[in-house]
Structures are given as structure tokens and as C-alpha cells.
Image 1 (cartoon, rainbow, N blue to C red):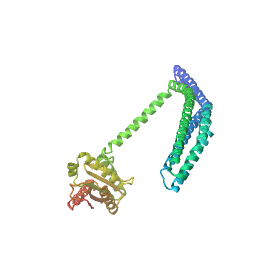
Image 2: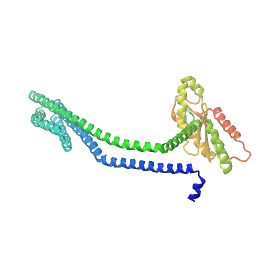
Image 3: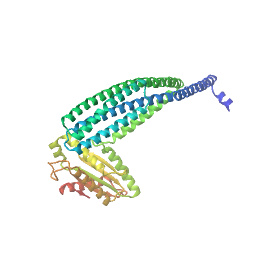
Image 4: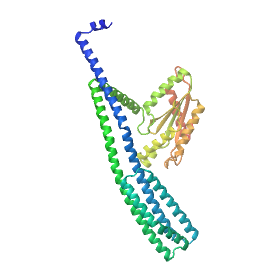
Length: 407
């Protein structure tokens, strides 16, 4: 069989085919080698990169813990100061309890910070901070105790001022510690960035080689054509959707309505199932535009369409903008009772918008008049007759005072 195939091809074609096969094999082998190399480098640098990110995360947590420590010191200063403004002993004692609770918060933040890996510079700064706190804490705690016991007398106020000066010193030490942590964090982040960049660069080189080889053997051409085909298909689908969607309201337009109604009419005729048509008209919409302007009119149309869309939820039904301020709804396999119930829900949904309309004779808000018709198509029936009946019912709803459903 192979012998017959070779005889059927010219000698040059057989040679080209053989060379192409060899080239494809070499190309795919080279691509596979590049991919395996990328995987190897990825695993090789994975732990290094993960460790770099973990160190960076540790430093971020250390900065956060330091900020929590500083916030706790500030809160303690607040409770100390606030206690001096209170006349009642129990109120001052309550402030002392809050003061002590902030000390617990400070210690928790400190312990959490110590648990992280700390550099030599950070340890030195931390030791200086703890030494400063150890020197100042007794006088600060004594000031709080004196304020609680004695109130805001001169001695207590003097001790409070001294304590607050000490708190300022503690905050300054914490700020110095934060600067050290941030500097170390920045350094570690730069190291991590270099390590990650190296990994990405190595993998990018191998991936680039794979892509280049794929382009040589034509794979990139195939992928590009496939991508273009998908893109054209998506654009076509988008254009199709746009051509059947009303730009203002976002619901189906007249074109989609006509197509859908024609399809459902034929289906109803085959299945001998009822088909309901609802015609909807916003009452005195011209007066609305004249009173509030066309921009408000457009907003009203969008709001009405959105409200009615919340009623027409079955995937088999269709709500469309028929034209201007008119809407239409097609309800396949829906009898007259169900159609009237849905029409009433549509009317009420518009009423519930409570959109102001002072130039309407039906109400002081936007309303709609609705005509409903239900029909089971028979051979020889004309769809135009159904439209005429729906329009007649709509006209009757307007004649009877609007803001109502006539079926």
C-alpha cells in the first residue's frame, strides 16, 4: 500500500513530504524539550519563589503588628486623658479597664510580631522599643491609678501629663521600629522580585523558543486562523444580538418580535395550542415628553421595560418594544386566563414604579393600557386578524379610561 502511494506521488512531492515529516518531528521534539525545560525550571524555582513571597508576607504582617502596637499605645493615652474628665469613680475605673485591655492588645501584637522571622536590625530596634517601654510603663500605670483614685486634681493632672509625654516617647520608638521594618521589608521585596523575575525570564525564554519553533512549522498560523475564526463568529453573534435588541430599553426590538411571533404562530398551528398576544401602550406618553423632556422620556421607557421584564420571566415568552411607547408580549401555550393574569401583573408593575406623570388623565403617575387576545390558530387563519383584535382591545382600554386591561 505504501509502495502504491509513493508511485502515485511525484518523486519531488515524496521528498518534500518526507522532509516536512522530519521537520515536523524535529519541531515537535524541540517544542517538547522546551516545555519540559520550562517545567523543570518552574519546579526548580518554585520553592525559592514561594519562600521569597512568604518572607515578603511576613514583613507585611510585621508592619501591620507594629501599627497595631502603636494604635494600642494611642488608645491607652486616650483612655488616660478621658478618665481625667470624669467625676464618677466608677466611670474612671471603667476607663482603666479599657486602658488595661489595650495593654493586652499591645502585648498580643508584640507577641505576634516576635513570632515572625526578624532580621538583626529589627531585633535591635525591638529591643530598644521594649527597653523604652519598660522604663516608662511604671510611671504611666501609676498615673492612671492616681487619676482613677483621685480624679482630676493637680497632682493627678501633673502625673497624667508626665505619662502622656512618656507615651509620646513610646510612640516615637514604635515609629522608629516601623521605619526599620519597612526598610527591611523593602529590601526583602526587592530580593523576592529579582528571584521571581529570574524565574519568569528563564521560563519566558524557553516558552519563546517553543513559540518560535511552532511558528516555523506552521502551528502559529493554524492557531491564528482558528482564533480569527472564533473572533469572527463572536462578532457575528454579537451583531446578530444587536440587530434584534432595542438599543434604548435592552429588550427585543420589532424585528425580533416579528420573527418570534411568526415562529410561534406556526408552532401553535401545528400543535393546536393557544397563543396569546399582549399589546401595551404607555398612557399619554406624548404629554410626558412635552412636560419632562425627551431624556426623561427615554428613562421612562427604560424603566417601564425593566419593570415588565421582571414579569415576563419564562424563557418561552418574549417582551419587545413594538415602536415608540408601544410594547408587545408573546406568550406561547398560554390560555386567556393566564394571559390576562400576566397582563394585569404587567400593568401593576408599571404602576408600582410610581413614576410621576402630572399630564396624564389616568393617574398622577405613569400607567399603561393593555389589550390581550388569545387564539388557537387554524388553517386559513391570518395573523393580521389577531393583531387587529389585540389593537381593538387596546383601543377599548384607552376609551374606558386607560390604566386597565381589556381582553
